[in-house]
Amino acid sequence: MTRPVVPLTLADLDEQARNDVFDELQSRMPRVWRAMRQNEQQESVVIVPSMSVDRVVAGSGAMNQALEERFLFMLLLLRQPRLQMIYVTSMPINPSIIEYYLSLLPGVIPSHARARLLLVAVGDSSGTPLTEKLLARPRVLGQIRNLIPDTQLSHLVPYNTTPLERDLAVLLGIPMYAADARLFHLGTKSGSRQVFAEAGVSHPAGSEDLRSFDDLVSALAQLRASRPQATAAMVKLNEGVSGSGNAVIDLVGLPVPGRPGESDALGRRVRKMVLEDLRISVDVFLDKLTHREGIVEERIDGDELRSPSVQLQVTPLGEVELLSTHDQVLGGRTGQSYLGCRFPADPAYARLITDAAKKVGAVLAGRGVLGRFALDFVVVRTGGTWRAHAIEINLRKGGTTHPFLTLQFLTDGHYEPDSARFLTPRGEERHLVATDHLEDPLLRGLRVDDLFDLVARAGLHFDQSRQTGVVFHMISCLTEVGRLGMTAIAESPEAAQVLYEDAERRLLDDAALALRPQPLLG
Image 1 (cartoon, rainbow, N blue to C red):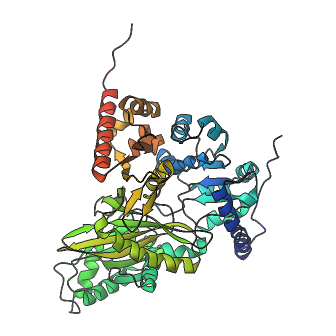
Image 2: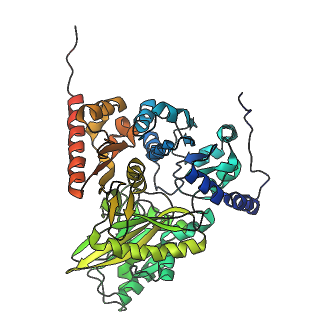
Image 3: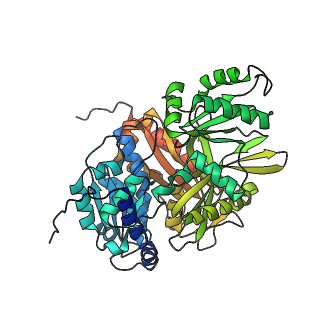
């Protein structure tokens, strides 16, 4: 018998009351965590992959949907035979995509897993964050809550946390495995610098909590006074994502620090700063700085630079766990946009960044942070020596989350920080190369089923017996946007790169063939 849909409201709860209810819900997380580990009856998880962050300019409906579907790797958790999952998206997910992910499940009958997967679509393809769409639709919230078998053994997993996600948890009556929105500042660019200083971790010289043009000019002057050899500075909005809120200011050829005319010259350089995001102007960027604040810091330079990251989590039991390291692949106008990653990070500096990450993790755990987060670094080689500088804390899921968890869920392996290796239960190494940005106009000639046809013909499916292969994601924007994500998994860094390049070549070749005129039958 279907339970009635019960409309929900927050009208009678002020901000403090909402936080009080949320705190009470969060106190359940240790019990829920233990239930997940023991795969208890009636346990469930609600996935709401809402991008409630400043993405500067909203994307297309297909692009927003594809970003929500990046979380479909979570379906691999259905290998736990008692787990029920409620996965929420803006628009319905193509059934072929669901079948594709369920086919990856090791040792599980796909139909059994499908029966425990409940899909909820809002029916709104606009660029509004998914959580906001849900909060505006009490009937949909009531439907989700009625699908939860036992609220005492359920929890919410969002992409990131704001007061919107807190309100969603309160309305659903379940705790959330993610950082409290009241700790949001710790994950901003300014908050990150403050945490790095508290942890005693090296980070670029600079200033935080800037909110105006004059603040930028003053901060640049201070930077040049302390680091006269600096050739460039980074300006970063507090809440920029994937490099889109970054800009570069050239510091070469300016008056000597402290001399007359320096401030005017710096002001002109600010007006000419090079923005990573071409879709906005300097004036729009400065307006966002006024409302969101930001930082200025030295752009690190050396013989060789790389951009690794470290993933950690603080469990509901208070444990700080180091999960993985990655070398990020960056691109864009100023080399600040996230394109993909390689895992694990180079052993030459992996221990360097994990040692620093542990210190930061301890500070964040002490502040009450819960769930997964990532730390971004810049490592620079001068001669034969690597130095690491922490640059950002991401108190949310990020671009390296889904490739790593895909690998972990498929293989049951783990990352060993001491050796900087990922090992399967059989003691075999695994490496990956991943991207969210396999983009080409040719791809618009392919439909979702065309992709899966190629996967079958070219042998690109993930092979459980060998534990190698390719896993695709962001599949739904293939035809409209001409973009796709994929993770190539193999026994070595070289093999993973070859597999990645082979899959890319085969995909583009097939897309080119699809655009050729087809002969008429009859």
